[in-house]
Length: 205
Image 1 (cartoon, rainbow, N blue to C red):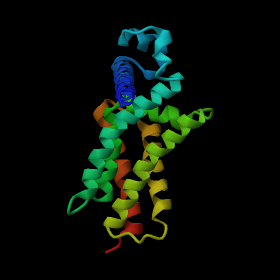
Image 2 (cartoon, one colour):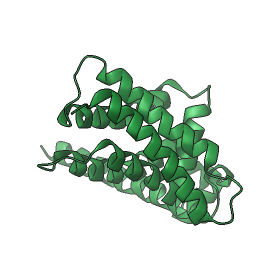
Image 3 (cartoon, rainbow, N blue to C red):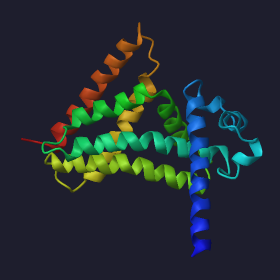
Image 4 (cartoon, rainbow, N blue to C red):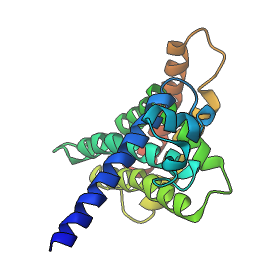
């Protein structure tokens, strides 16, 4: 019994230290692009040795992914709230909230695109990234059904829609307009057009 409690305490302490490492990484990501942050930088911010950090994360990829998951977890709760209201958000509201999340959180956007485009992720990292993206596919699929879409090909449409939003962001995030507001307004216009296509196709009066 005592040994069990001791092991439980050690595990909690390990998780606490691991969380400190993640928070240190996020602090640095807020200061410069995440791909310029090395494990040595994170270790220094966390107040531990570079060797110690590998007790908690086997690779830089694993640390980046854990930070991404924690960033996106809060956002997914907000999207669940949009879905669970008595009158759920419509497709356009969901889409605008999704792109605004990534416009306003540069680090999250950078990590997402990095993980999407990198083709040599380790299996555990790739598996966990897939589980995170699945959250948004699931939420949008549920949103479509709650708004009256027929369930036949809803999953396919959910994949297509989220991929379309990500593509709009990647293409136009650094579009050469006069200021950031103009860029956001242009992205919003494209998102509204895209949302209307899905609304007309899936949710007919």
